[in-house]
Image (cartoon, rainbow, N blue to C red; front, side, top):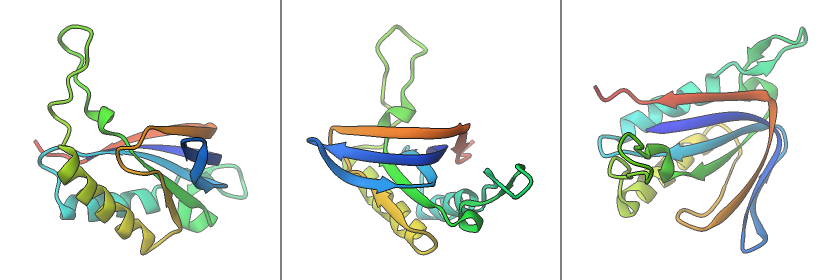
Length: 147
């Protein structure tokens, strides 16, 4: 599982020019799954995300989590996080989990997040336009370890 975390002032996702999900201050998560990912991985990743201290405290130091700061999450499925570009110029997506299985994990991921924090989403597999106002910019890559 790979998750790109971006600290955001305001972000939204649109499908066919209609907003599907929108947040004010919080995190945008670009989420991709691979073949070895499990529900246990999801639970660990959610705990890492909601406790990740990337929001400024009263002294301007990144010391607060999204929970501490009262933020929201915009979660976007992104199978292209598993692109392999080692050979040639056309990315290979063999490492990405197939859509049928990935949507189940993506839904489980969002449901686990919703236990702790407000979550908005796009639509899995849709052609989405994502508008992110990255605050900082702060961008962090999180991965499960399947080695």
